[in-house]
Image: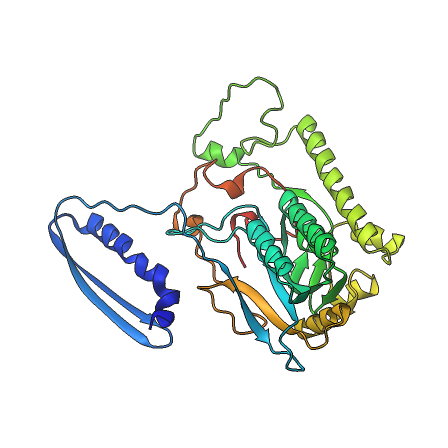
Length: 370
């Protein structure tokens, strides 16, 4: 029964919060009905009445420990030998160095989680190779660069081969990471590429004028607020931001040229405009090594490691069961998804940032998932 209810711990834990909200709506000295239904392996009906009198205090935890990593076998050994393993590490969603906060807890930090999974694979002598399962449009320039650096550290320290498997989308910063692998396998329908950098600037001057809001800062240094959303970019600020974006762009191109030497000069020039391309085109341009599926990437990892009988394991949190190659850990809703307001400086994802990100939706940096 404990195992069956585990996925619902957070929901059950949130009932006091729901009671408190109802209390604020109906007033004091009322009996508040609380009803709930949980469906999973079985069905559980919960009914209660809370007779609340006087003051109610609710203390929310600043963060909830997601628990240690668990390695679950998701593909058995072809030969029945479980002594060697291929570790599947997922890189999923927007890559930002921040927690994915919810109303009642704090979710996974993609950068921290990636490092933790690499350390688990490095410390397990039975892990012969790693497959990066990549499904991401990219993210922050620095966050993506940290992941790439951690992957280089892992390879240099362990000598274990790494295969990147590109899923639906593996663009921009996600591709920046993938080129650090020994081999790249892309699905026939994968979107990849996106070799470029962007600074997320929004001009809200007219919108603020409609609300009769005037910004009148006191500042020392004429460019200390360059990129401010309350006004358009002036020439000096735009030139400086352009220079930084171009520097990050050239860093990306240099990494592709170094890690993918088979990419010709003409093809490198073609992708330098930041375009995204589909898997077969990426193969023709040598941006990836082969087309296939996740099992093919695992087979390639076995081949590189000289371990044809290796089983496949997936690292995940204990409360997020993994039963197949494609298991994805659930993430809680963000505070900004539930609250209709946002205060500048409180939402870390709104801090100024350069991004390695394919960004058809300008609100993407404020959503984290998958």
